[in-house]
Image (cartoon, rainbow, N blue to C red; front, side, top):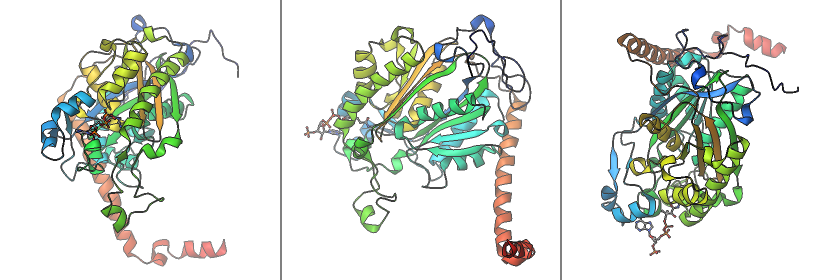
Length: 433
Ligand code: COA
């Protein structure tokens, strides 16, 4: 099908031009704003449908571990950690109830609330995580149940710390293909559970937390305009959790040798990260038809401030004030680092409609990913009212009740013998078939 350069945006979400609709059926706050409308980036110029980030939220566990606390656990010093990484403290999931899914649910609820979209409107949940609850079921399915997102498909995305940006690219693809109107992309981690707290080379780096965005179909130009995804599996052994998968199933031996903890060649990962962060940023800007000078804010994966300085600042010559860094407070939260940083950048007034953003990440795999985003929605949150809050709490309680009810029914059902469950008909049918 040939592209029509003069074609005006025609597609709509729920039939309202230039607007998506919220879960209550009323027009959302993210309406097209002609006076603020930036020109559409090249990669998206002729597309009548765009994928916009319309909601965002994050949640981190309460417990904070400072570098000074770590001095009591391993042979390290606050000064070493700060000067070699930029990290000062990190949040850690101390309570057993704080899991990747429970943190993810909190972040996802916040994202839906900020967009004023009901969970039932979500078509797809992508959970990027390096510390999933289980090999299966997916953490995304547990989040789907916790949200009461009864109309959503759900899957986990394994691309380590690049996973959130991979997820954004998947969300964009689903939306532009017309397969989804709303996609939740969640990055959720409890890395503290897979970190070896006796290994000073890794335990000082990581933190726990979750961030989420709601990506919506829209006919407002802009949004996620381009993405770059990369992988080099020859570096798979540089950053890995060796045991617990099918290559090295969990056993007494893998547990006693610490095979289920993160193992890393920090220097090799550092070199790789410094190279790909700059390259991926250049590539994604090229795809979006932008130059480095057009960028208003880069939100890089928050692993090590020296990686950010050596790549984004030095190689690309992007000034410090255009790069968002918050890793001093959270450490490396893997897939959650970019969405948490996005939320804080918004809170700090660093993002405005019309801004060109770049999200760029790297991680185990080895993998890397970048997205270019033309921010096209207002950054204010909907007004919080008593009624809205009550409605939401009722929705969450209904979701929890529905889930419990389904489990209970399954338990009761499983008590009956097979014949009485199917009234004998299925068996006969099977035999006949
Ligand atoms: N406290 C004190 N000393 C430490 C230490 C710690 N927590 N960790 C390592 N050291 C020591 C090393 O043992 C080494 O000592 P030696 O010279 O006596 O052998 C010295 O510090 C230098 O170690 P080195 O590994 O060369 O430091 P570095 O400058 O490369 O910094 C990292 C180490 C891990 C901070 C850095 O390589 C890094 O950030 N890599 C990328 C990791 C990453 O981002 N991973 C996640 C990817 S998503």
